[in-house]
Length: 507
Image (cartoon, rainbow, N blue to C red):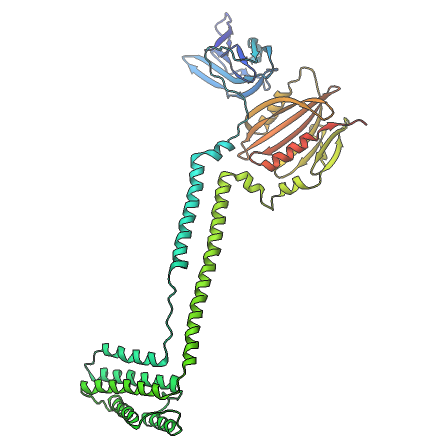
């Protein structure tokens, strides 16, 4: 429901100016919808003021001009949301509008501001308050779900790592003696098919290579570099020197197999398959007899087996260490990410490289500023800055995450300090400005006013908190202004420490 107030001019070409509000009674801090409307056949010469005078009311929100053209009748409307933080009866002053060479004025409106809830024709009001979405974000189901999902994924990965690195068996090639290798290799020859002379040649070549390899490793003679006769001669010499206790029958059997092998490889001899089978049996017998004829080297075999066991233990230990390292890093990473999602600011504050945290713990500077001996404690001294454009001086401390400024300006009794501040915010591109007001008292009982709230910087696409602490002395306005980005608890502590140090000293 709107209350409409207006003036009607008698001549048809004269404009009609009307003023509307949605209520005449509000609580402290609640908002009024305020509207100025101009209707005329021609609105091309209508000019609204650059600066509106609503004091003691504050502009909470300003809307762009709305123009309507319908059947030769044209209208232009300007809308605001106004608020007041003091109890009492207050008048919204008339606003001057220029229409051609005429000055038009909106109606003055009486508004009652109460500290208790009142009936305002069921109109819904919106409290002016600081918007802080951090707590909602922390408790949102999506944030909790995301954090739990990260931890669950990490647990699954650790489980599979445990199965792969700890529970799975270490498989390496078992240690086999030269004799075991030779016997196994001869047995594998049974799987080969022999159909042509080439197959016989390959078969006998592999069979004799197996026995030669055994003699190289276990008997330690150069078998591959010797012809068949030379190899037999070397074995006979070892027998004579009593280093190899082989029977004459075993040596003859070996000689027979080597001769058949030479015929197959070099004379293209194709023996009967029974001969091939018998030769393989003879070689197996030669292997067994040779193994029994050489000194028993049990210590050597045990040492080789211990090396294999030690290799298995080394692999198991390396796997265990890898599991511990990877799992620890994964747990640390997942908990860090989850903590950052749920508690981003607290997580950031524990980091050693947080420069603001170091600033908060460092030694600060106590200095006096302005001719009024304003005392203030800050991480660094505020610098005096000369503004040649506006012909004034001020003190300033600029940091990457916050800024502090001290201004001294002249003050008049009817000056709209909050309105001036909001106009300044508008010029800087700040939008969605929210404002609160409270009394500020220094340690020496000097009283001032603290105006604080938040705004969005449209140019930086960021949200900031601000506070302006105001003192009035001898028609001078002393302002201590701080601005810092939201969601930074350490910077908020820095600003709070600066504000708590504000006082005036004699001298």
